[in-house]
Image (cartoon, protein in one colour):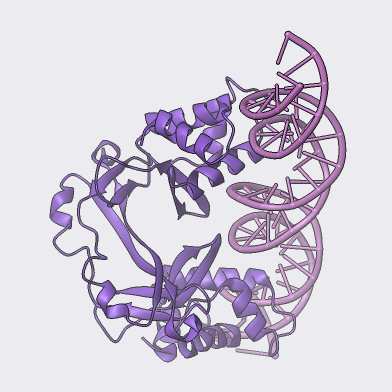
Length: 137
Length: 137
DNA sequence: GCAAAAATAAGAATCATTCCGATTTACTTT
DNA sequence: AAAGTAAATCGGAATGATTCTTATTTTTGC
């Protein structure tokens, strides 16, 4: 999924095309990392001086509901990143310094679902935390 | 680790023995599930009418720092549970209705660390979410 | 029992997030 | 292109979890 595909998906679902939405998506597309609502506001308030948190949060929520963004909670804040589309379902290492991510090839859910008979599995999370090579120095 | 071992660890580390701490640990020991600060307060305010959130949060933080409790963030709240000691390091399924957990035998970190040369790995999380058999009905 | 240090209570403060009412904007229909 | 409608946005207030502050109380070593 790229920005255009995401905007088309929004239109299909009855959401309107706004510059703020497109710029938000472009911001996530340009960054291979998790961003908070505050990060987004910081990056965008240059172009949109009156941009409100409500707009950011509402759109982040819409994007996440449609699967355009992935969300994870980290140190008390929601963090979002563009959903990777070029590959199968996978997970991420997350740098706690800069937020950049690295893909983990394997998903541990394989072969595990069988041991949850009678359970209703709605999701799972596998994340590795630490510092990336750039931030270790 | 049980309540007594946890209290001894606290003493070793220079923390004082208080009834509130012991009761908090007993509460976690009696519950095989994740609890929030509010849950703890609800359960304890019968015996300690004036119990304050500050005390709960401070002690939860101490317990987590010493490895007595495990913490995870779920729907915007911190949740804590007694660290399992009877077994090797492992992970949990978490019921989103009642909070009860089920052990996952396998840890996906095995064999993965090798692919993170140059990274400083500080932790990882593997959790499966859904509803347990009791809550499915 | 006494003194020092830690723990606690009560409430204020903070921070992320959500809600609300009023206004503006995007899109559809003339 | 103008008008109408519903969605989107703004600005600020409200909420909810968590942390901080100050004064008081409790634990513990002596």
